[in-house]
Length: 74
Image: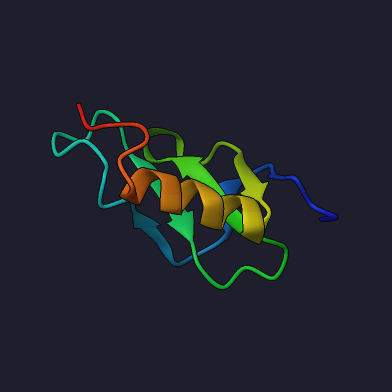
């Protein structure tokens, strides 16, 4: 993967909030689908901040683990 971070994540449109995010907006993760270098992930409270770009295989494994209950729910 050539790109590991995006310095100003607001430069990309199409972010969506994780369905596992806190309903009160305190612990929100946003991802962007369709990015050519992996899956960008950012903290929704810091939209102008950086995003990390996670490789597709690693992101898929993480999502599968979350769906499988590996991390539990708060």
